[in-house]
Amino acid sequence: MGFAGVLELVCGLLIALGLFTSFAAFIASGEMAAAYFMAHYPKSFWPILNSGELATLYCFLFLYIAATGPGIWSLDSSFRKRRVT
Image 1 (tube, rainbow, N blue to C red):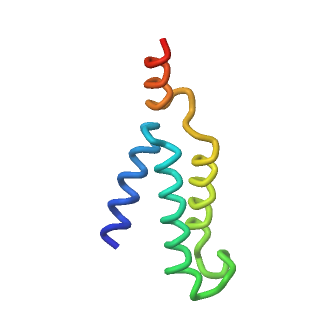
Image 2: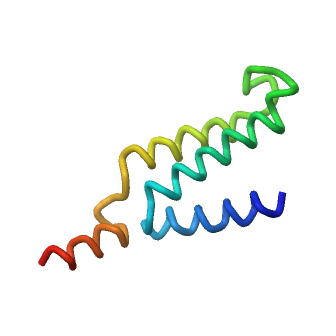
């Protein structure tokens, strides 16, 4: 539980700042999937029946962020612009 809390804090900060966004979002997505299968799945398969809606929502949201990458206001894009010019 302690490691999951640290992982959520670090990945959440990295995603919010836009630093290593794709990597952090992919790790956070896997952590949310593991949380769903460890805590909610044994009760029932369907998230609406086992109160796992937020875990699945965050899992797919982080997976979307990992696939699309950081936005134009992220630290990753500002560092990328500095190197190019």
